[in-house]
Amino acid sequence: MTDRLEYPPPAITALKRWAPPPPLAGFLALLILMFAVAYGVGTTAGPVAPGMRSTGGDTPRFDTNPRGPHGHGGGTVGTGGAR
Image 1: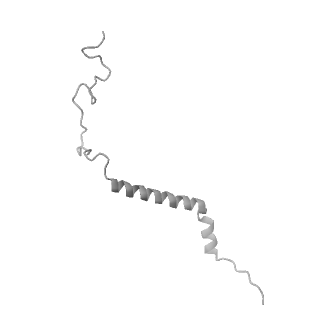
Image 2: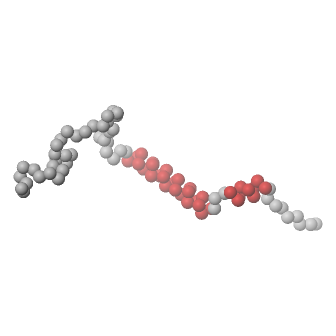
Image 3: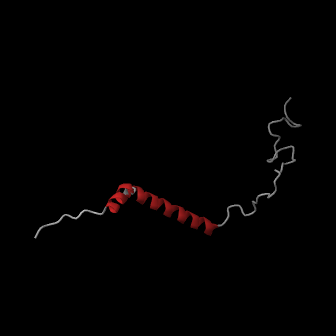
């Protein structure tokens, strides 16, 4: 009885050559799992700012308040400032 060495077929050898290393494949699988869990949690939590919506128009909207969006003069001296 002779022992015969069995070599893998060429297709298996080529697949092993081009496959990513196991640690890299594990890292990518973990990364995909983490994104899926984060997406699920975000979907369950809902929107952070429910009233915030886009304008939907093609032209940008500009604020007409001269004192700025936060109620200050934007660096200019007001009526009670030092001269």
